[in-house]
Length: 410
Image (cartoon, rainbow, N blue to C red; front, top):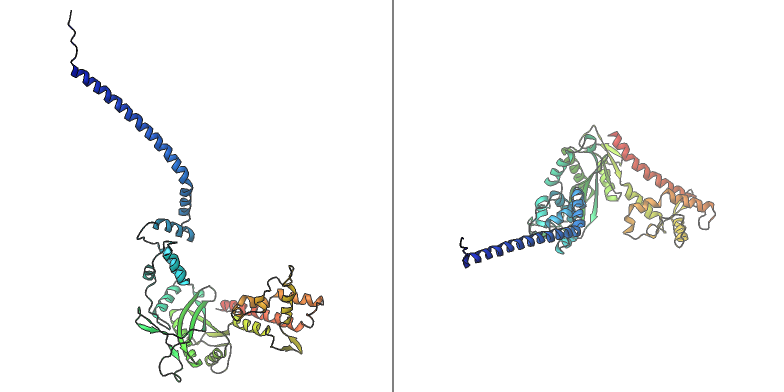
C-alpha cells in the first residue's frame, strides 16, 4: 500500500489565494458590465434631453445660406471664444448694421447680447476714410467696380442734386489730421477764407432701367451762388461720364436757387432739353423733382389762407377737411386712409410723399363726387376742386411714365 502525503500548508495557502483572485476577477467583470449598462442608460437619457437642441442646430446648419441662419450659426461658433474668425457674410451684414445705426450696434456689442466683430475689424474691411469732399478717388474706384456688372442699357442714369441744412461746427479729426466742417464752396465775395458750412450739397446718380443709387460727390457750402453750383454740376457730369455711365437727365427741386442753375445750364432760357455737355450728339433732359412739386401743391392746396379759383369757381382744401371731420368718429368711413397727418400735417409731416399722393388719389375724388351727388352739406360747388385734384393726379402719373419713355428711348 502506498503512503498518502498531505500537501504542506504553503500549497494550501496558494490555492486559497488563487481562488480569491478568481472571485475578484469575476466581481470586476460583473461591475464593468453594470457600469456599461448604466452608461448606456445615461446616454439614452442625455440624447432624449438634447435631441431637440441637436435638431435645431442641424436645422440652422441647413439654413446657413440665409441671413438669420448664418448669424445664428456664427453666434454658436463664436460662443466662449476670445478670438473668432468671422465669415465674410457676417462682416458684410455688420458693416451695414453699423452704418445704419452706430449707437445701436455699439450698444448690442457692449451689452454682450451678441458676439459681434469689433469696430477695428470692420474698418479693416471698409478701409480708412480720408473724408475727402467732392468727387474723390474712393468714389471713382467704386463707380469703376459698379459699372463692370452693368449691361450697356443699365448704364443710363439720372443725376440728382440737393442741399440740406447742417449745424455749423468744426471738429478736428485725428485720423485725417485736419479740421472738418469748413466750407469747400462758399461765396468768396462775402468771406475771404473758408467759413463754417451751414449746408451740405450732395450729388447722386440713380439708374433708369435698373435700381441703383450711388452718391458720387458731396460738398460743404456756405452762401453758394447758382454759378458755382452750375460749374460743380458740369464737373460731376464729366467725371461720371468719363467712367462709362451715361447721364440722361438732371433732377433737382424747384427752389429759386436751383431754377437759376438750370437757366444757366440752358444758356439763358429755361427749356426741358439741351445739348449734352459731354457729347453733342446726345441730349440732356432736365426736370424738377415731381415729388417736391406734388408736396408743394399739397401744402398750398390745404392752406386755409390760399385762395385759388378756376373760371370763378373756388379751389381749396375745405372739402377734404369736411370729409375728415365727418368720418373721424365713425366706423364706416368714405375714405379709410384719410388721417390727421394728411389734413393737418406738421412741418415735418409735410415732407412725406406718400400722403401727398394719397390726398390726390382717385379714391379721394370719388368720395368727394359721391358726397356732392348725395347733396351732403358742405360739399356744394366743389366741381373745380375735384377737377384740380384729378388733374394733379394724372400729371403725377404721366411724370412717372416719362421715365419709362426715356428708358425706351435710350
